[in-house]
Length: 204
Image 1 (cartoon, rainbow, N blue to C red):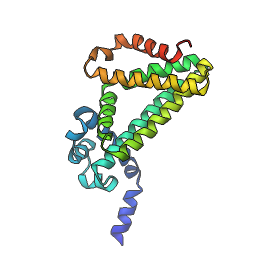
Image 2 (cartoon, one colour):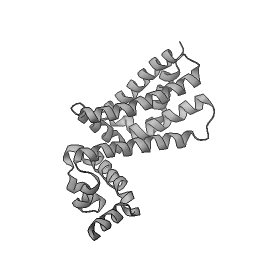
Image 3 (cartoon, one colour):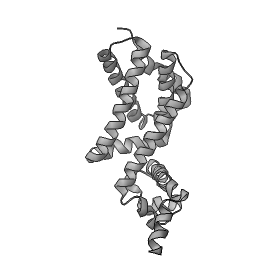
């Protein structure tokens, strides 16, 4: 009985409440540095400075930690975008700032770029991971459709077509960056953002 009470207390302590995110952050960091297949649960526990038993208390498998790392990425992406747009009202400027932030976050940030590429590869054979990533992509797509509609006055159908092309271009840039690292340097930032903006706003 005492042991059960101790376990329940530990589970609901502030430190325990923070542990899932701490482990997810460590998993994301290591996956983005070494690749998902090269990282073990022992590696993640060591990086988070916890025992493997503590890790298993919160995540029962590597698959669970991969999905937790994805959720960590999703939250950070949405948090950063909404923070950047918080005080911008003009629709065109909102779209410009979103594209600027996306290039910084998804292309120039090597950890994010490597992690998302790793997840894309893994999701080919993992249906549950694919569904999770698809939900994230659908949310991003809907967000961009709303931005493009507000900035251009296009119909939903035309905005959807524009955004699909835009997101394909962005994913293509991420793949090219593996072989053309010059795309990720800061001095190319403005040119890349300008190209994406032309895709989003080109005249009919």
